[in-house]
Image (spheres, rainbow, N blue to C red):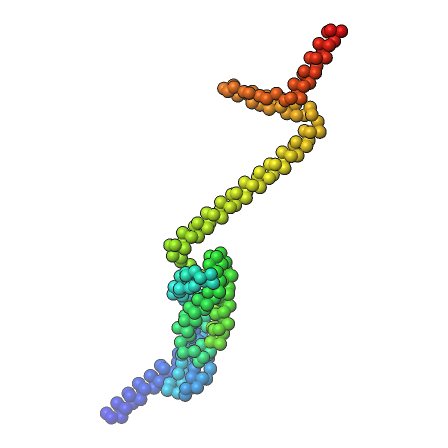
Length: 258
C-alpha cells in the first residue's frame, strides 16, 4: 500500500510539473523569462516551456494602451489658471526593458504624463492652448516618447480633451471677442467708405471732362425718382442748365429787338 500511494503521489507531482512546465501566450503577449533571478530571454507567442522553480515568467501585453490623464491645474505663461485633462496612447515595444528598467511601467507612464502635461502647457499662453491644440499635442507626445524610450515604451499619440476656465475668465474672453468683432466691423465699414470715395472721385473726374454728361445724369436721376408717385419731389436745377437757358432767352430777345 505504501508503494501504491507513493506511486500516486509521484504521478501527481509529475503531472503538476508538466502543467507548470508548459505555458501558452496569446499573439499580443510576450513572456519575460528570468532564470534563477537573472534575465534569460523573451519568449512567445504560442506554446513555451518554463521550468518550474528555476525559471519565472512575467507576462507583458503588447497592445496599445489608452490611459486617461487626470485633470491637472496648469498656470499658463500669461498667468491664467486652467484645468486640463488629456488621453495618451502608448504600447510596449521592448518587454525586457519595460519589466527590468522600471518597477511599474503603467504607473510610471501615468505619473510622467501628468508632470509633462503641466510643464509643456505652462510654457504657452492661454490663446495658444485654445487655438493650437495640434501643436501642443505633438510637443507633449515628443517629450513623453523621449523620456519613456528607456523603458521600452512608445507613446504614439496624445490628445488634450478639455481646457476648463473659471467663470470670470470666460466673461473676459467673451468681452475680448465682442471687442474684436466690433473692431473688425469698424474696419470693414471704413474700407467700404474708402472704396466708395475712390469710386465717386473717379466718377466725378469722368463727368468733369464732359459737362453734358452731368446734365444727362441729373435727368436720369429725375426719371428714376419720378416713378414714385406717392411723394412730392423737390429736384434741384443745376446752375449751368439755368445759365444755358437764360443765355438762350436773352439771345432770342435781342434778335426780336433787332
